Length: 295
Image (cartoon, rainbow, N blue to C red):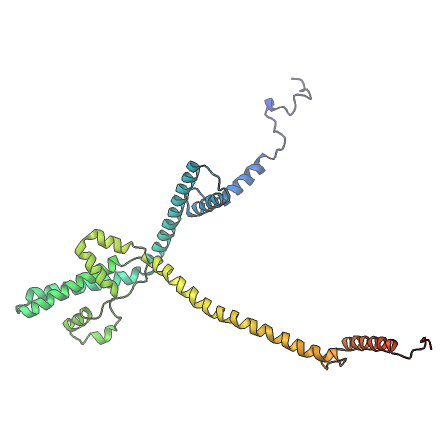
């Protein structure tokens, strides 16, 4: 076989490598840019899209009615998405924070209910039976309290932590009675009422978002408290500004008479002395009996 021609060397037909191109680097740059972009459907993307739509509606007041309605509908949907994502994020954080407390108190409530049922089966007097039924109801509400307490609110414990060493010598019935007759938080009565209405009411209490609304209602009061001292400061500012002007007037009085005040520096005193000298020279020239007066 003869040697190949120079034109055939490096041609793509013979499997030779192609010259260097900037293709891979462009792909890497594009992939790097796509990493910074938020995924469609995420809370960051919905927040950015809602901000852009809000700016568009504010800048362009002459949009057609159908376009404006579509944009407002899309804006409401994105705002709902943002609030839902924030709710789910905070909900999961609060569940993880109070999971162990809820678990231990639910186990204790179930244990108390079991003890009361056992005593209720063995009781014979009607007065004791009524009291045990009331204690059983409290224990059942306690169990529902640990499961249906609102996730967005700070969990309030039902039972006080007690040392196990001191409880060994005490009677179990007396300890359970003291726990069941202790004072309950305000949410306990809300859950008790929801138990009468059904599981859907308990679910609504557990997933309610009233904590955000309560915090939003407290913010204006804090702003008003901060604004009150600001108004008093603004009222006192004109009086503070008026004092330097009066002092300046008092300082300006001796300057008109030609006396240099003591708190002036050397340059200002020299300037005042020169001005006073020129003023006296003019007065001397204007007096009668000068050299150029004709007789």
